[in-house]
Length: 391
Image 1 (cartoon, rainbow, N blue to C red):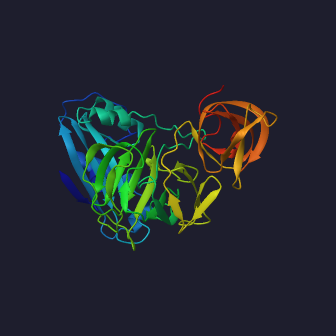
Image 2: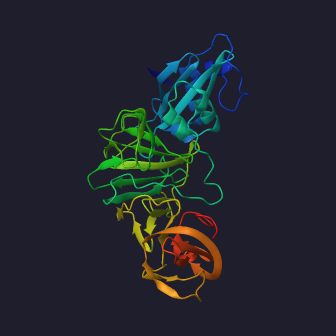
């Protein structure tokens, strides 16, 4: 069921109902008391609390769209979107919710929140595949781990144009979570395996493991799904200019954004398609690097596929090749070389001679899958420290 509600006048009534939403009360056992408000109103109240003041200011006809896609007894599951105006640099705010009737009201959590995973594990309206994805530990990026396991959101082997560099979901706002991409066959694909949800026409969210999710907006011919399992590279739609839920688009593209733990996160520093994104001096600027090769706005990004969690991209810090050694140090015998931009697999790591690369000085060395050693100063792994344990 789709439930559309104007924002005006709802907040006071809902607060008077003394709603129980995430973080306002402890988990309580279901009670026979009648529920005071609808689940749609409870979800709307929580969503409005997360919509930024900037987004509200740019909304001419504020409206929410709550869709209950599954319901059983005291449980409800679905999507919620706060629509916005058709202005530049604004986008809709969306969430996947799970709700449980407790003590006469609704306990509501959105995707990425710890409480969401807790309720999902118990809920009869969440399937086993979803439970497996939702159970992924949030907060894994803390401590300098920027590995995503993601490809770019188009076919591996294609080159697309980065039409806009890192910027906010709503344009100039921080964090710069998003990039705009277009070109190739214009088919937008899932950056990593997960579960997919249609937030509204042209707007898809895929929830992945490790607390990550990705958003795709402005799509034409987008899929209509409600928790469908998708593999990496699965069809989501085509680049377009759809603004059904708000915003603006002057040329067909996909507005691709990175989220973790219920919030947009900066895309800079993350590896997607074996490119590391970097912010520019302002929103929509910036670049991406693969090895020593850099692409700016208007440049082409070749989709190399996902970087494995025990893999690295060689960054010789200027091109050329990187010498492989028989042990963890420059005093060991040379065993050939590996080219800048190549992908290598790391078996384990050890300390050796110190070297300085693009990101500073380190004594860490990595033994590759062929038994040779290279300095970590000339590798991009997305992790500070060993990616596959110590030797």
